[in-house]
Length: 176
Image 1 (spheres, one colour):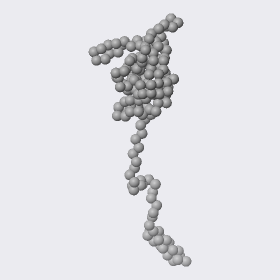
Image 2 (cartoon, rainbow, N blue to C red):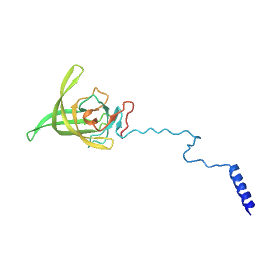
Image 3 (cartoon, rainbow, N blue to C red):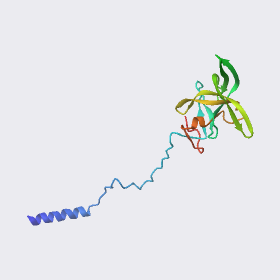
Image 4 (spheres, one colour):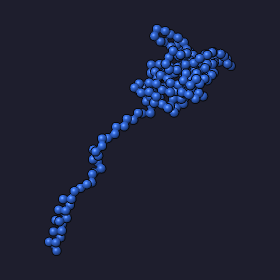
């Protein structure tokens, strides 16, 4: 009986040793296909040009993202200062160049800022505007200026970018 058990064990060991193992361990990568490289852009990275909205306006403006500008700016027409209840106010019109959507605004005058540009200096009126960039809506200061000679109607400066976004100039139109 003992001889039979020994023979049976030797036969089983021989059979197991010659059997082909088709099981691939889970830690070995499948080298048949190259791995896909997925570039993930963090949510707070924006491009050199982005869409911005000024509620209640429905259509967006293309705005240059400018990390060198302290205060953001918007193209405004018919800028008129007036007084209301002893406080300084300003009325102005924003017209979207692409869609021709036109909206009149009246806002309290926030302050006047000095703008320095290549040997020139000027003072501009600043107002607080509701603005939407991507999925975020917030209030930010904008200088009012006739930007007809500029390619973009809006300029987003550090007052909006600081603590909110990082700019990658190699991309644009990342916000919807």
